[in-house]
Length: 244
Image (tube, rainbow, N blue to C red):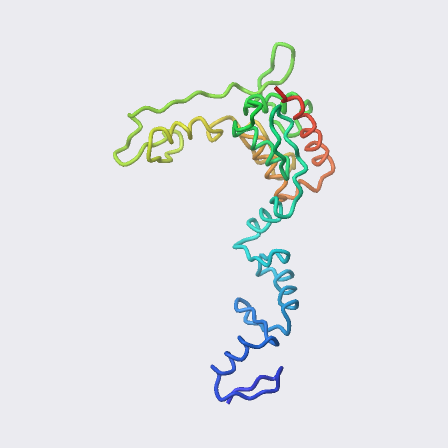
C-alpha cells in the first residue's frame, strides 16, 4: 500500500501513488530537486529562488545556465528597445548599447557606418583611456589617439591542409576558402584596443560591442560602478557623430 499524506488517500502500490501525483492539482513536483509543492505558484517560487534552476517566471521557461537566462532577460522579450540607431536612413532600435554597436560593426546599417569609423569615434571620445588601452593606440597628427589600421590578411588555396582550410594564426578550420577569409576579416585577430575598466578584471576586447556586452552581462560586477554607466551613456550619445 502507498499513502499520500497531503491528500490523505491510500493507493494499492507506489505506481498508483505516482500517477495520482501526476494527475492531481494538489501536487506540483520538481523532478530535478525531488520535491513536491502544493501549488503551481509555490513551485514557481522554488524555481525562481533556487540556485539549481535558471528560470524566467514571466515566460515560464528554464535555461541551461545563468548566462543563458541573463541573455534572455536582457533581450527584446523583456527590455524596451530604447537605443535608436542614429545612422542616416536607419529606423532600427536596440535593447542595449552592446546591440547597437554590434549593428554598426556588422556593416549592415543603411548609413554605411563601419567598424573602423566606430572605433575612431570611441577612441577619440575616451580621452582618459577609461575603456581603451593607450599602449595599443596610435597618436594622430593633431594629437588625437587613433585606433591602429585594420590588418589586411588574405588566405589562398595553400591554406588547404588536406581536409579543410586552416587559419595559420589560430589553427581554426573552415569548409571553404571564402569562410576562412571572412574569419580573417573579422575582429578575431585584430588588436584588442578595448579593456574592462575594473582593476581586478582588465579583460581586453577587439571590439567595443564585446566590451559593452561584457559590462552589460555583469559577469565581473563592473556595471555597478556609476562611472562605468556614465561612460556607456556618454558613448551612446557620441554615436550621433556617426551619421553619414
